[in-house]
Image (tube, rainbow, N blue to C red; front, side, top):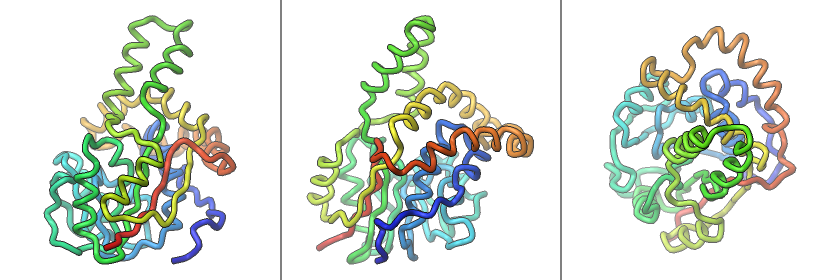
Length: 274
């Protein structure tokens, strides 16, 4: 495996993501694409919790096709078919994967495990479907929701009504659905207990970037409504790409490019061990 600690080439995943998703999703997801672009993925690959397939369609564009993907949401699976990045997609729970033992060389689980109330079960399933010395690549946030609630409630307390604050906190809680906010040491122990060895990890997303993500989450409800009605976050994609995307990309570029700060989220690459 190549040296993953070498400086990462700054491909412009940010502009690609901003053309397809709101800032609250695009900024951090673009960072994750940039980091995972250095991972030497090879087939067969399973995308665990693929959602609508947007992340993998941007990360793997013009590179490789992913062999398999699963998500528990049938609507998201229907949308992911249109991306053309997967050879096969199934509606399934990540804790009970419909695959034989030792089926995959890589399992990708971007922003999945923090949403699970019992990530150990899914880690055990991941270990089962990985080939000997296969790899699990995943990302997780590390800030606890209580931090979000306190900091941003205090921040907007002097400028907004209590109803707006309640709406903001509800938006974060309902949209991000964070159930397993563990520290790196806890993830490390859990992975060891499930038969994995961490071979690479990287913190990313500065506190400023996370703040932007949380503040702009006000607009996620609107984006979710567009997605439910139109099958996409952006109602007028051509206009958005020509006018909105260049402006937001310019504004957010410094946050995207900055890798001098250790960050508040983790990218972890773990190897299956017997």
